[in-house]
Structures are given as C-alpha cells and as structure tokens.
Amino acid sequence: MTHVIVRIVIWALIIGAAYLYFGPKGLDSSGGDGMFENASPMYLPPPRSPRLVELEGLAEQGSLTSGQTTELQSLQQQRLSGFWAGSGQTVEAALAEVPVQRRVRLAEILQQRGLTPDEMAAFFIVLDRDHRTLLDDRD
Image (cartoon, rainbow, N blue to C red; front, side, top):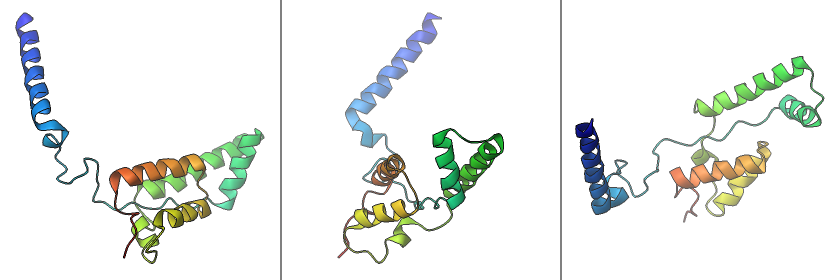
C-alpha cells in the first residue's frame, strides 16, 4: 500500500513541476492563444414562441394546470434542442453587416429573441470565452 502511495506522490510531483515549468499554456492542447477558444460556430438561441412566453407568465403567477406544465416543459425542450443541435443562424451571420458596435447589436438581437438578462449575460460570457474576437469592430 505504501508503494502505491509513493508512486502517486511522485507522479503528482512530476506533473506539478511540469505545470510550474511550462505554465498552463504548456499543457494546453488547443493550439491557439486562448485556452478555451473554439473553432465551431456559435448559434443564436431560437426565439421564444408567443405560447411559451404566455405559459412562462402563467408559471410565474403560479396558475399553471398540469397540462399546461407539460406543454411548457415540451416547448422549453424544443427551443433548447434547436440551440444545442447547432442549428439556425450563427452569431457571425447575424452580425455580418454590422461593422461597429457589434456587442450592442447582438444584445438587441438577443432581446428580440426573448432572452432574459441572466440568459444574455451567460451567452456573452460563453461568447467572450470561446470567440473573443467575434464582437470586435470591423474596418
């Protein structure tokens, strides 16, 4: 048992020393400047349907029936499945004609699609992490 613990400690020391020597970029296999940058396109979330907005309002009031609850869950799953499947319009395509103030225009697009402020904040966090230059002004 002691032999196994000694081996684990030795490997932990080797990996720790490599991390200290090379830093996080030395252990990064992404190949770019950003450790989290992603080459795949980022898609806009699909818009909320009027029925989904109506059911979410009823849910906030606490007046949903069991059938409406089932319908709400189904509509939410349909909306999110399109986003996670990577379908619809990409952020790059939506901002193709916008050379300046791209962040502001994207915020307007997301508001039109019915995103809440929390959802928009999360979307921008992921966008800034994975696609840092996407919202930069174009010349």
